[in-house]
Amino acid sequence: MAHEFVLQSSPSDAILERRLPVQKFEPCIWADTFTAFSFDVQAQEERSKAIEALKEKVRDLLIAGGHNALDDKLILIDTVERLGLAYHFKQEIEEQLEKIASNHSEHHDLYITALQFRILRQNHYPVSSSVFNKFKGKDGKFDEMLSRDAKGLLSLLEASQVRIHGEDILEEGLVFATHHLNILAPTLEGPFKDQVNRALEHPPHRGFSRIEARKYISFYERDSSYNKLLLELAVLDFNYAQNLYRKELHDLSWWWKNIDLKSKLPYARDRVVENYFWALGVYFEPQNSLSRLALAKCTIITAVMDDTYDNYATVEEADIFNEVIQRWDINEIDRLPEYMKIVYKFIWNTYEELACEASKEGRSSVMPYIRETLKELSRGYNQELKWFMRMEVPTLEAYYSNTIITGTVFFSCAATLLGIKSASEQVFEWLNSRPKFIKACSRVGRLLDDKGSHDREDRGGELLTAVTMYMKQHGATKQETLNKFAEIVKDSWKDFYAEWCNLPSMVSFDAANVFLGFVQMSETLYMNSRDGVTNPNFLAPDIATILLDPIVI
Picture 1 (cartoon, helix red, strand yellow):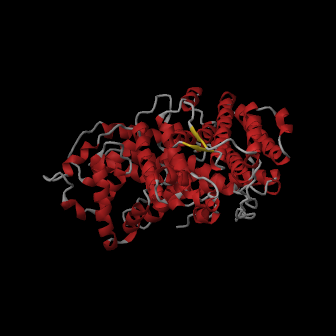
Picture 2: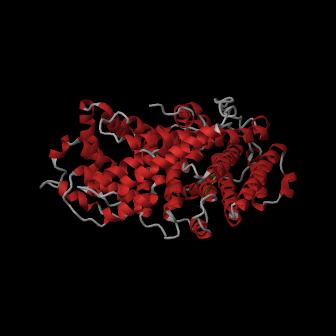
Picture 3: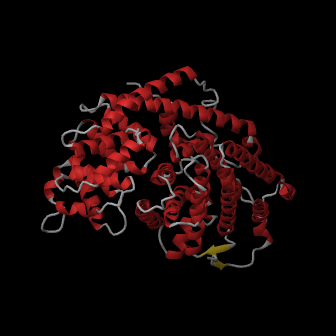
């Protein structure tokens, strides 16, 4: 569909050639933290052997029967997932969930009912929220007797976070559980109190899975009923993965240092650590370094392109740069000003590096999809520059259409899928068809970004941003606009889960988890309307937790 614009006037030469004052970003805060890392191969191999031995014992737990098996299995699966271990036991968990899904017993309390609902929905089972009807009283509201069941309320709160459109009972459940947990929280004790406060602060199933796993390990180790085997495996696995991630970031940091864009493009953010952290959030499974590093490098490309368009290029230069990107011919490079030659050569060389890696893995056929999403991203950024320089004021429909692209979900996830063998060319074609599922992911990412970056990007009111655009067109205040964006994000999560249980058969769970990781990481980076990439101190504690501080028990 063609975009519609409200034209202000023909752009003057002054606008076309205008270069804004360059915004200065904070320098990298990590110095040589990761370039100086020394990888201990022997220690890593010893951890790997210990993990494999413990995995066999946990596997036995997952497949064993027993009294009250359904409840126990649900709790075990939930614990394994929260500890960040589920990726080791995909088949075993799937087999158990098949049995659980076919069990239609209604004799469960609120805790188990909500737990079963959430786990099944998170694992792509189309479950009905009508299972909660039995907890309502004659007045049609949740029974007040439940208001003292902290465990059940927490389970209901978490189940409500995977609701879809039309599930009024879960909308009511969210309000009911939140209200009563806030009352009960001060009276709770120990790790359960911490878990409740965490859930009230931010839904754990919408956050970066490694951060949430680390937090849950700290809760679990203080729980008197903890399973020693699970805790030992969780700690070993976390520390093993942490060392692998540090090795990847060590290699990536040296790659970035040798390219030396920091000195060549002083207008661009120096955020290799934060960009890697973003990639880690999208796909954390240790065995797939290719996906992570491909995404990390493409995220760096995205950041350099974004800063080139937003923080330095004139409209005239940006148009030429976009034309060169669209033609994808290294011989076109001489059309560009010197600084853009550096950018284009960086993009070209990085793409060729990824093509080489793809060839080694027999994945060359997916590289054209990545290239086309990169071209599309360039077109989106170029259009935004014209809007924000007030050459054109778009309709909101046109702006939202463009944000589907500039939300970066297509480029980012195409890069990640490069390393996922189960992602066939059909999956890339599905991605290109702009399914509702992907649009929901993109809206979450883009609107959270818009909320977090507004204060930086509007240059004291000099430039148009998504926030000011909405304010002008709706006569809204800034706070009303931010509230509206938050509402759209909530609705987009509902769209996401509605599609999550109805994905085409060619989209494997591994591929689907890439998109889940994308929206979870968007929530993490832009939590509380902050910009965790531009302002590195926001993310520093989380990065240290995941990449620097091993667990010692």
